Length: 137
Image (cartoon, rainbow, N blue to C red; front, side, top):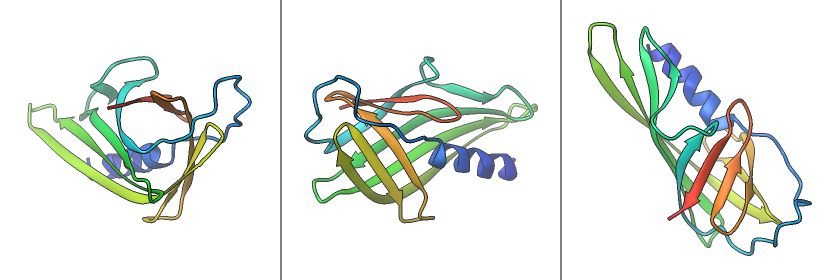
């Protein structure tokens, strides 16, 4: 199960692609605040990444972005073994967040990976292997 969680962590931390700010939406002036994941691929949480052996579900994820241009993030996974044993694990990350137009560039201080989000005043979207939509709290 640890190998599967490591793979899922890597996927969640780096699942993004670049985008441009030519969306026709008003330019976002700030993304400072707490952003909670509300859907993955259009489905609400918990999001099932793997159906069994073990069942792996994403049950929470959030970003906190500061006015100093830094972020912290965390996500919590729940694993359910075939025998009914349930475990949860939380993974944290931190780094810098830079807003340009409506695009937020995140740079992880953990592994120097880059990923991008397309922002509005109330949501941001990270697209990649899955599409994650976050709502400002």
